[in-house]
Each structure stands twice: as structure tokens, then as C-alpha cells.
Image (cartoon, rainbow, N blue to C red; front, side, top):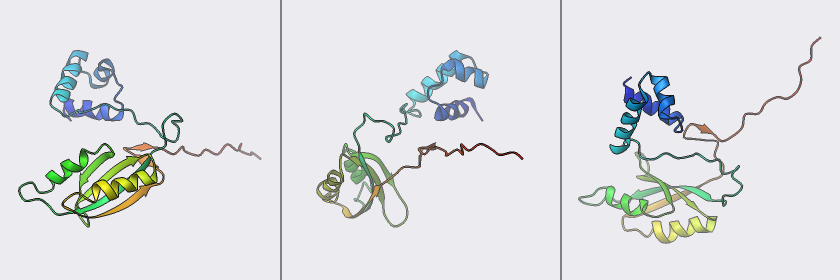
Length: 164
């Protein structure tokens, strides 16, 4: 594994690691680590650092409704799926957008303030776009695991053992 991949793996696991921490783990100098990370950022490999927040434990955040929407589309001449995908990902409600293989073409993850808000977005904004043939909406009820992070706490048995 080269130094870039090793540093990327460490940052994927914990983006808060300092250059000095990564240097100690990789046996590189902190200056070399800093230069490699800067190169990765400048080259667009590292695009953003973000905190993963458990919404059920963040009492100050507003309760958002998330939905996954399957979209069947008609590809555009000259642009294929890209032109329509660009129109969709520009909506602020859209958190993720994927080109898929299989029974539908695009998968969109959106957030709204309520079920009605999500339904309005699908009915008035998404399904009315030229090229959209059909949509199928699935509301996300609970998140167990996302991006390798478990959102559920492991249950521990707090009973004391009995010895004879």
C-alpha cells in the first residue's frame, strides 16, 4: 500500500487525526503527511471533512424526514443521464444522487421537514421534470448503520453471574 492510500484509510476511519498522529502511524514525517494531504485536497480526492451525527441523540436538531426515491428516466440525447441528474442534485432537499443499474435509473436520498414536505417535493418538483418517467418513494423509518457507523447501541447483559 502506498503512502497516499494508507493516509486516506486512516482519515476515512478518523478525519480528526493530526498530521503528527498520522506521521507516527505511517513512519513518515509530519511535513510529508501534510504535503500528501494537501495534494489530496488540491487534487479533489479529499473533498470534505464531516462529522457523523446520530439524529436520535441530537436533541437540538429539527426532526427531518428522509426518503429514498427510485426514478426511471429517459436519457437525453447528447447528455445521457448527466443533464437530468444535474437538475436534480441542485435541489437543496437532495442529499445524495446515484446512477443505478437494474429496475430504475437514479436513486435520490432527500430530506424534508415533514412527510408532506417530501411528498410535495416529489409531486411538484421531481416528477414534473422533463425526462422523469416514474418515481417510487420509500420513507426511511430508522437508520441502523450508515457509512460503517452503527447507530444502535449494543445491548449488554447487566446481570451478575452466579457461581456454585
